Length: 109
Image 1 (cartoon, rainbow, N blue to C red):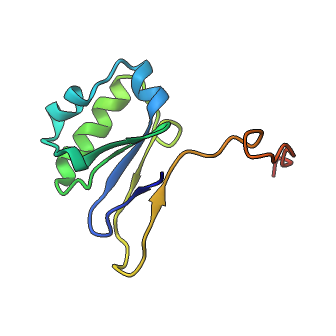
Image 2 (image 1 turned 180 degrees about the vertical axis):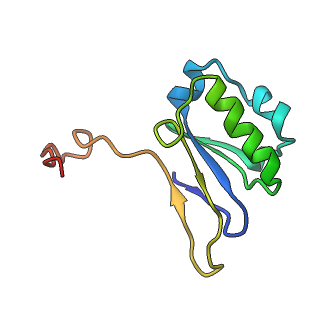
C-alpha cells in the first residue's frame, strides 16, 4: 500500500535495502529526530521518515546517512512537502514488471 506524503513539511524517503545494508535501525533515526510511529513508516522496500518540521534536524540526518554510506538520490531523497492541500501524493517502490505481467523492457532514453 503506498505511503501518503505531507503537504506542509518535508519527508525523507529511503530505500529499505540501503537502510538495512548500512545497519541502521529505527532507534538510530530517533537519535536525530524524536519520531512518532506515524513519522517512521515502512512499506515494502520504502521507508518514509516525516513529516520533518525541523529543517536543521533534517539536514543533520541526511549528512549522517551519507556518512553511513547512503547516496542522495540513489538511496534517499527529500520530498519537499511544499504541496497544495488539495493534492494527495503517495509513494511506493516500483512494481516488478515480471510480477505484473509486463515483461517488455523499455529502451534507455
